[in-house]
Image (cartoon, rainbow, N blue to C red; front, side, top):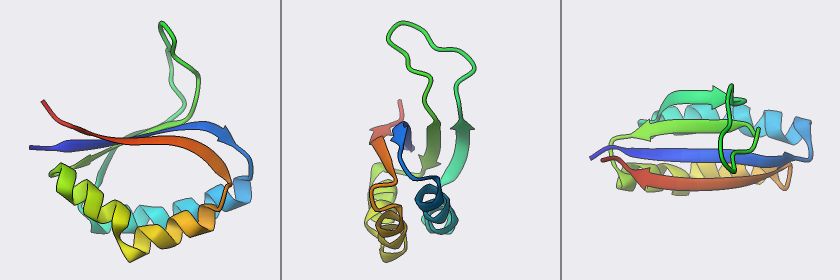
Length: 95
């Protein structure tokens, strides 16, 4: 069953750190089988929606998403981010 890694950026505090994170995270995520479905600012928000950068990545399973997150390559990306952003990251199983 597919799973979706959903990240919303509540606040970006350091663009340079975020840029370095992105350089390292992209190959780490794709190496783990992640496929980017959406990234950027929302065109529309409803109800309690916030206009925050959002990223949606599809994985073959929750386990694949977890393995990617816990991989040395992605952990290196997180270390580079080092407080450069406040994010909400969750993995949701597909229906």
